Image (tube, rainbow, N blue to C red; front, top):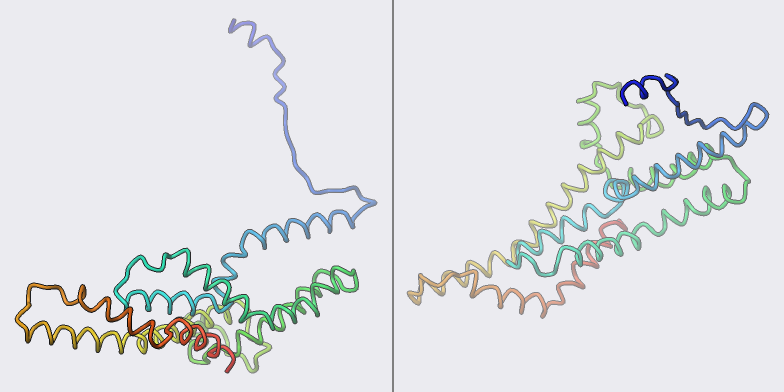
Length: 236
């Protein structure tokens, strides 16, 4: 059997993949590259949502709220993430509509090319990022990369702008989280003082304070206040 195997032809089959569509059809190659780029963008879409939209601020604030109330698993993380996604769609609607009107629809109608559509789509997105990015946070990345400071907004690379936007969003979210913590912290201190005065030191204050936190949150319409405040924070 080994002799028979060695007696076979020594040619090894090869497999090659190419995007070539022929020398006379360069437009097909361009189309294939555009499809490949579109698939890449779709695979990275979740990362784009997390980095260049309002999702970061919203989900961090929701996490602070859940920690402040002392309920670790209620509402579930999936519910909070879904609510944050719906709020992100509402907040980003003006920017998305502008991208659709100036870039996507003209490209679908073959009025502009793919590269021009990307440039037009980048304009409203950069306006949103600049609006909510602190200059100090943006300068941090210029210091790290040792790049020359830009003279105007047009010279700021989008990748640097997105990084500064993330830092600004985290700072804003932590500030809102601190303000959310204050009333619940005061309630925890009041409950702890009452239990200590009654001599009930063996009873965990967090167990007694949780129903009062929930009652306070419901009475003041906490979800409505937080959602409205988050949405309005992007309108300014």
